[in-house]
Structure formats: structure tokens, C-alpha cells
Length: 505
Image (cartoon, rainbow, N blue to C red):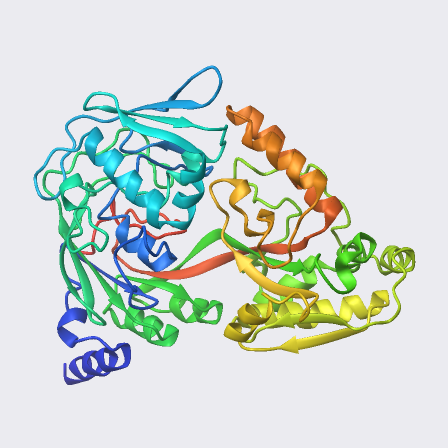
């Protein structure tokens, strides 16, 4: 007994939390160890993963993502009705939905919330540029009129564009009131965020599919506890202090698996690693040299070095994984085992003069560094001279903004709900991918109004990406987390959620 008490006190000290906060993992309560303290609960201001993970229990959007990352209704009652010209969206709203303060959800709340989102959120600001008007159509519908067609509209409305009571909206939120299955009860910074079941919650209908479908607040309480140290999250999970531990190192997989108290959870295709190329200045302004990089590399060897075991990664030339609606092999070129002869021919065609290729990576993401080491070996085998520059992540993000400083940098991303929101497609993202054929392909996508038309247009974009070679997709990686034995109903998702989850008894 003394050992258990001592372990609890020690763990609380390591995690920067109170022992009281950690002791709440009991019947009816889920205690979730997160990677740290969220900077805010205003997801419109800061739509980072940690904020989205917590906020999705409190707030809801008009649409959300199903298992294929397609946008489906959440607070909306149905998919929008589009005008023939594709510029007017009429969105019906669910009736009988209440906010945590007891007020009724209606169209006024939607227009007020979306106007705030378009004023302060980065993606909302992009939408604002093409919105002609946003109006209410009675109490249970809104109408959005666009200046030009914008295919990603529903995808952008599926993330961070949360609906608040119109009376609570302010430049700086002081009350965090939503329509979600859980309401905020208390926040103690660096200790815990306590959510409690919203008894008057009205769930959407339908089969559970990623974030879509029925939502039930089974646990009476969820406590999100910030635990920045990954090893502390592992030990807290194994000792029984946490019901769920997020973002565990792959090296902890066996330790959790061999414990008697918890099991590891793999979320497949959590994200993808890429090598982004500088198209503005330096060696790689020449397409032949970018294509030589593509031809030279072996993605399987890079991912194996980075993640050690194929349980934790997959190699797929499609930019989106097989589980995604956007998965396609269209346009794939120069992706496979590494072809030094083909790469050498492209080097010759591009007039390569032996200037070192500056490959920038960071050890703060160890898998970035390991990818860089293997990439260096393959590029040198193809005939490049390589200057592998290992810097901290802050330096990398600063340096990549200057086109004179680098040729390739290594990074990773999640899979967005809409393909045109991939960072590299943006003209101003480091790498400065600008080409006439990309502009035409993206314009065709923006003009699409149906899923089939969007899919066909995306195939055109991926084909152009492989030809222009602004980046090299290395592979998909899986995320590891941990779940206490006895917790039922948890299904892995990119932003972990805990409705439909039963606490251990």
C-alpha cells in the first residue's frame, strides 16, 4: 500500500500535476494523459492537435469527418443544397439541440460563430475571401453565397469552426459553452481539465464512423491531465493512474504489451513523412534534379530506419493512405526501391555540377533524423554530394523560410480532410511550389461540386505533383497510444475521443 501511495506522489510530481488530479481514475471517470497543457480552449484561435482533442468533446461543428475523411452532417441536419452554379449552399440545421447553458441551438448561433471563425481562424480567413454573404434562413437553416466555387468548403467547416451560443461570442472567450456530449466544469492549468457529462445532449444519428454517427457520454467525467514526458505517460498507464495515454514512443510498445494493466493501441496512418524541395532558389529549381531525388530514394529503407518495425509504418506512393477516399495511384512516378542509374541520367540531364545538396533535418523528431541519414546514403549513391545539416526544430522552421539556406527539409503532416489543404500545395509554403500546371489542376478541383468530380480533379493534382516533384513522400506512419484494461468501446482516431467509451469497473 505504501508503495502505491509513493508511486502516485512521485508520478504526480513528474507530470507536474497534483496527486488529487491523478487519483480520479475510478468507476465512471476516464483519466486521459495528454502530451501537455493546451495553450487555450479557443480552438478557433489555436487549432492545434491538443486543443482539437479536448475541444471536440465540448464543441461541435456543422460537419465532421467519417472513416474516409469525407465531411458528413453533425450539427447540420443534412448535406447542403447547392444552386446550379455551385455558388449557393443552403445548410439545414438539426432541431432540438441545446447548448450547455440550456439555450437552444439555432441559425443565429451559426452565423455569429462562423463570422467569428472567418475573422480569426487561418482557414476561416481563406473562406472569408470567397464568401459573398452568410445569412439565416429561418431558425433552422443558413445560406452561404460564394463569389466563386470553393470545393473545400465542407472540409474546412468540419474542423475548428465550432458553433457557440451567439450571446457568448466575444473577441476573447471567457465562457466555453458548446453543444457537445461533455461540458467544461473546471480547468486548473498544468493540473487537469475536467469535463462532465451533458445530461441534455442530443446525439446525431447513424452508425459510428470515425467522428460521425451516434455519440453517447457513457463516462460521467473525463479528466485530461497534461503529462509532457512520454516515459511518465507510459509509467502512469502501467501503474493504473491513467485510463488512456496519448502519443507513446514506439519503443514503449513491448513494455505496455507485457504489462498486466494496459495494452498498446496502434492508430494506423496517423500521418506521413515527406522531404520538401526548394523550387525557388538553389540546385533544385531544375525539375530534372528534383526528379533525380525521387528516383534515387528507397522509401522502405528510410521508414524502416525511422520506425524499426513495419508495425509502425507503411510505404505507399499515393499521397493519401488506402483508408482514405482520396487514395489513388494516379500519376505515380519514380517511387520504389531506388534507381541510381535513372537518377544519374536525370542528374546529367539537369547539368548537375557537384554542388552539395543541403539536406536539413532535426533530432527533435528522431524519425526525421533517421530518414535523413538513409536519404543521404541513397542520394550519394546516385551521384549527389550531400550536406546533411542537423539542427533543432526551431532553427529548421526559421531557416526554411529563407530560400537561400536549404535545398530539402524533412517534415511530417497528418492527412487533411481535403487534399487542397496540404501545406505544399500552398504557393507560399516553404518550397514555394508554383507552376502553371499545378495552378490549372487546383483550379479544376476548386470548380468541382460533387465527390466524383473532386476525386477526378485530385487525381490530376497528384499527377502534377509527381511530375513537378515539389516533395518526396517517404511513407505513412502509425501512432502508438495506450489503453487501460477494462476500458471498453475506444476506437483509435487521429484526435482521440472518449464519447462511446465505458470506464473500467
